[in-house]
Amino acid sequence: MKNIENITSVIKLIPLEHYVFLSLALFSIGVLGILFRRNTIVILMCIELMLNSVNLLFTAFSAYRSDTQGQVFVFFIMIVSAVEVVVGLSILVMMKRNVDSVDINLLNKLKN
Amino acid sequence: MVLFLFVIMLLNLNKKKEPHKKLYTKLTAIISGGMLFLVLIATAKGVHEIPLNKDFDSQIGLVENFGKVLFNEFMLPFETSSILFLSAIIGAIMLGKKEINE
Image 1: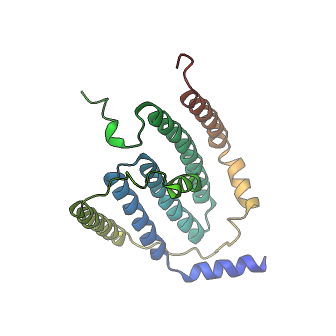
Image 2: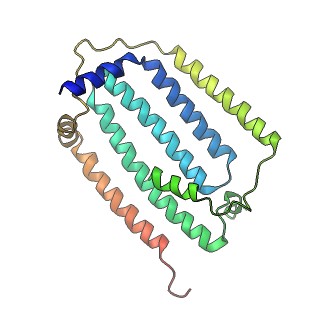
Image 3: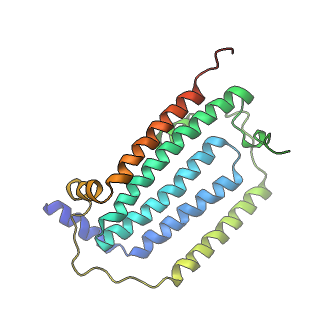
């Protein structure tokens, strides 16, 4: 119990804005990665990065407001991201099998 | 799952044929990313601060308290997510297995 109290007092030394800025930076990196990279694995990782930046924000606000519901939201976001990665990776495997590449530019067959 | 993806990326199996972007594209990416970051920060600056709770409770992240909230208020979403998981497993197997006539 004593240790946990210590940890929280250390956490409270960091102002909330720092968490917000870190999370915004992670989110922009994720957006840019999705827009500029062509490798599907990297794009999946960038989606994860964006989800996790939102998770960080949720956790920070939840800890500062002493409100458990934010952490429950984080839990559900993690569930959804796990499901998304499962389906995304299996689509990736199919793509590799069919066109022998993970380049997203080859996936324009739905156009026209 | 992030670790799994990270390991795949670290393996970096096609180092030779990986295309490298032009300097122009990299510069554009950095500039537009910085601008996006600035816009987001400007948005965050406009938000007024919430005062901290007076009755600060450091125990909310513990498994006990978290579980109480999760299994009382959020029971239905929790159980629904198991259906989501089941459908994801089935979908992954359907997508991942080879076709019979292949």
